[in-house]
Amino acid sequence: MDYKPPPPLDVIITPDVLSKYQRIFTFILRLLRGETSYLNVRVFRSKPCVVQNALAALFRMTRRRESPLFPTLTSSNNTLLRFRFLAQSFIAAVTSHIPDVAVRGNVDPFLARLTPDTFTDVFELADAHSSVMDDVLSACLLRSSQRTAGDALRRCMELAIELCILAGDRRRGRIEEYAATPLLENLHASFVEKMNILVS
Image (cartoon, rainbow, N blue to C red; front, side, top):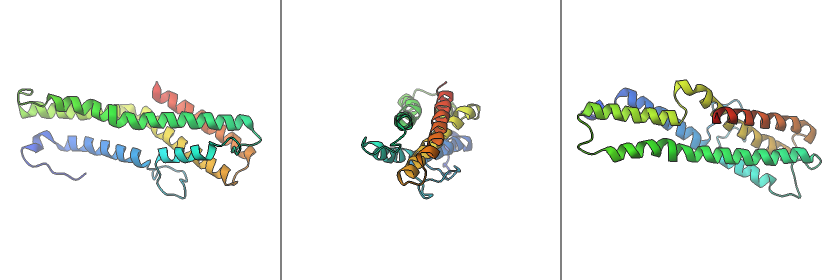
């Protein structure tokens, strides 16, 4: 975002605050687009895709009991279905948490406080504004002290995409059941591990 606030807004919207807005907007854009250009995975012929849409495609691939992706390996098929449900639930929770809790939950109370008598001067307002942006960054796991949790979140999204790719390859017959099973189990174990790190 390239915005140069005019005086006297430049006292409230400082370069530091603009940097915070930029980090939040970039994160939300990546989340909404499911941007994977920074990932080292092949995503549906290298096109960017939304993680939720990829999981919806996975649901369509796995919803019919008469045509499972693992027809001779029931336990692998059950793992796939559990993993799909877990990934869908997790991604849905994250994508609703960011706008509803992380952003609105912090910004709306701040906006409600904006009355002529709330702040003694413009510098107090600027400090409160910067503090709210810090709270949004924290809620989005974008603070440098939250690197482990932020990395776990990004890895969960990557693993969900990798699951969809594996299922697509299995559906197209590009990988045999016996070869896909250990990959599925590894993806599932990694997803659960990263999700537990994030939750804790």
